[in-house]
Each structure stands twice: as structure tokens, then as C-alpha cells.
Amino acid sequence: MWTNQSEFASYVELFNASQNRHRIVVEYKENPAGELISSKKGPELVVGPWLKGEKARSRLIPTDYLFTELRLNSRHFYSALLDLGNIRGRQYLLPVSFNLPSLIFSTENRQLIENDFFLSLDQVQRLSRTFNAQTGGGYAKMGFSPRWNSEFLYLTARMFNARFEEGDSLVSWNKAGLTEATAYIQEWTKMNGSAQAEADFQFKYLYDPPYRIVTGGRSLFAYIPSDELLILPQDKLANIDFRWIVRDNTTPVRDDIIYMGICRNATGLDAAEAFIIWFYHEENQRRLLERSRSMGTMNHSFGISGGFSAIRAVNERTYPRFYPALLGHLPPPDSLGIPRILPNNWKTLKSEIIIPALEEAVLPQSPATKADTILSDRLALWKKAQ
Image (cartoon, rainbow, N blue to C red; front, side):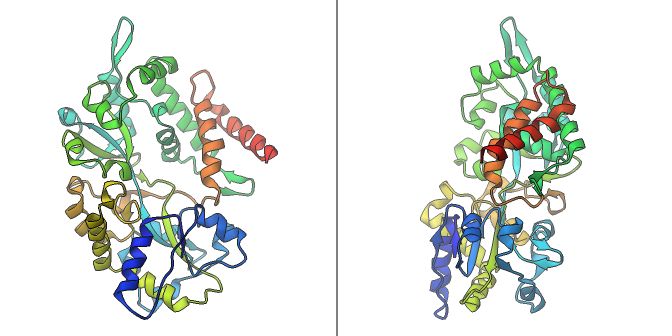
């Protein structure tokens, strides 16, 4: 098995000890998708993000037969996650884990939040406007700005259907959605006074961890992904609450969904199949969580392979035992917004092209309609430099 998910060393150890017929060996790869593409001989199993791109998935075999032979049940998975691993009707990849974006706030402000599960972008903007407070020297309090966190900025573009995905020119996007998202964020910045006011406030006050920012009363909300939120110690969780961020009743699943696949020309196919069937058994995932707790790794790694399990029943029946903060906050299966198919080098493209382009485009002095041109120009320059 090739993977960059360190948790799988423990998972494989438990699998190997559970039977004496098969033995899985784990080999750490920083970029499993890239290694799969460049290596002449791959492993039997690969686990990691960015495996859905055309080059990486061409090295995998479909796993439909595991469902048709009733060794796995497709209804146990989140259907949207399973669908992303399905290419032209063939199931090449099986989802392992995923993470969601959340906004945290102080329990002192809980009465302001209308919904027990979600916060929409419009609600966050409206509540932030009311929370803002100025003094003679600037803002003493500022509710929130999407520009304070590059990942939240990107997720906002996704929620407006910017639709970033693998394309003929490395990556493509939906111009209309990108323009709408840019205009929305620009209006938000104007509501906060100006881009300079947001930047000054961030520099002056937002140097603490997110939970301290909201409990300190300077900001109403702070962004934190689920894998960081749910490993916070209980004493820090005691004074905060959280909601999943939504738009049009959809919560964007973070890009780096972990998938598992069987490689072409696998010589140990029986062992690969046996591990997959064992791994997706609900009771075995409970054992994996118990082992993580006993080994103390829950302090720095959330859930199964750093996220929510792709098996719905595990999240609904098992996770609240290990993460009490999830009671009443479980991911609703029908609201998951799944990213499009992304290239295997998406992490680089996103940090070097997408994020800088968004940060430039949302400045109020730049017309929202120029967002497409800014992104196109940055992509062209990046390709020229390669």
C-alpha cells in the first residue's frame, strides 16, 4: 500500500493481526497520486487525495465487482462521495474520509444563531455587520471577513459554483460563478469599511488561535475546518460552539477527500480486496477509533484517516462516543457539496495560482468581471515558467 496517511500504518497493523492469510505492507509516499503516475510498477493499493485526476485513475482498476458480488454495500457510503469516484459508470475509487468547513463562535453569542446545524453566508454577513463596532482609531470589533483566511475565500468561490476542475489547460472554472463570488466578497469588504480596514484589524487583533479570537470578543466568527476543530482539548471546546457553513443548503466538502483504489496489474489482488472489505466494516472502524484513542493519536488526528468516515453509520453511531461535540452537529448526508475532479497536482495549482488570483480579484478596486482574466493570466504565467 502506498499512502501519505500515517494513520494507515496502525490500520494495517490491526488488519494483519486479525487474520493469518494476508499481509499488507505500508509504504509512505508524500504524493501517492504523483508516484502512481511516474512509477513503472505500482503497489496493490493506494490511499490518498488527488487520485481522481485522469492520469492517476488510469493506473487503477474498477471495483464495481465488490458491490455486485455483495462484498460491499454502496448504500453504506455517502452517495455524493461515492459518485465522485465513479467515472463513466465504473467505480474506480472508494471514499475513505472527508472534512467540512465550520465557523466557530463564543457560547455567549449562541442566542444570535438561528439554526442548530448551519450558518449561511448571508447570515454570517448580516450578523457580522451588526457586530461591527468602530472607535476613533478604527474598528474595535469586526464580525468576520472571508478575506481573513485563504481557504475560506476559496470555499466561498466554490459555494458560488466557480466549479474549479481538471481541464485541457490544467484547470478550468465557471466564469459566471467566479464573477458572482468576487462581487459578493467585494460587497462584504465594503460593509466592513474597506480592504485596508479588514487588513488592519486582522494585523492588530487576529494573531491568536481561532477559539481565542471568538472568546476574546473581538470577532463574532472564526473559520476552522473539522479536522482542526474536533481535536481541540475539551477545555477549549467548552466555551465555543460551531456550525457548518452553507449556501443554498449545501456545505462544501474540502478538496482533499481521501480515496482508496486498487492498482492495475496488482499481484496481490486477494489481499487488497480482503483489506478493503475489512476496512469498510462498521465494527472494524469502531475498533480503529478505539485504537487511536488508546494510542493517544486522537490528540492530533481526527477520526478515520484525519476526517469523517465515508461510512454514514460510523459517523452517526460511533463518532459521537469519541467526539461529544458532534452531538447535534453530525454532517447531514443530503447537503454535502462535492468538489469536481481535480488534477493530481491540485495542491500546487491551488496555492500558486487559484488562491493568489482570488486574493487579487476580490480587492474592491478590481472590477468583479476581471476575476476571470486575472485567473487566466496567472495560469498562463505559471505554465510559461514550468
